Image 1 (cartoon, rainbow, N blue to C red):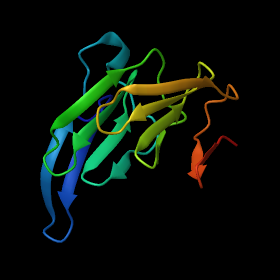
Image 2: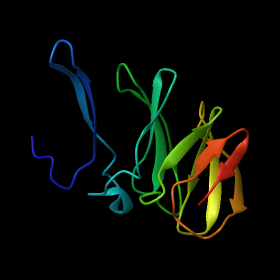
Image 3: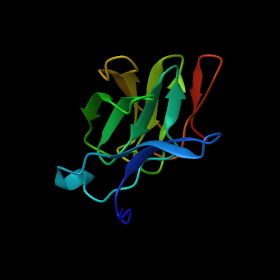
Image 4: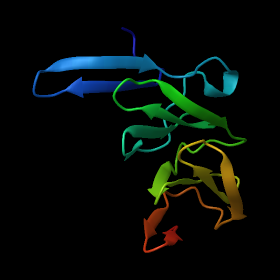
Amino acid sequence: TNFRNRTYINLYNVSKRQEIYTLLQDTSSPENANVLTGGVPVLREKNIYSAIGRSVQANDLETGKLLWRTKTEWDFTVSGIIDAEGIIIGNNPDGFLHAFDSQTGKLLWKVKASGTSRRPFYMNGVVYIV
């Protein structure tokens, strides 16, 4: 498989030294073609959340099935996304902090932030951008 300039989600069983699945992510639109993910994917319960190109998505961790994908105006390539008690949050270059429902992908809110594209942190009900 040619992995160059493509974004995949892979699941491996380390004890069996066996690949469970490899999924090529959305490259159908020009803004998502040949892009890297935004930071580290987020694991929550049985789902994996990732920012790929101008979208945030959820996949079933065990099967890889796409649960939802929400298109965005900007990417989260630098900041990535975090989990804040079931809310997926990302800060991106447009200077806004975006919050998505982890079950549906629906944008819950968008607020003006510091304008940085640094990775946010979450603790005790507060999102920090340092």
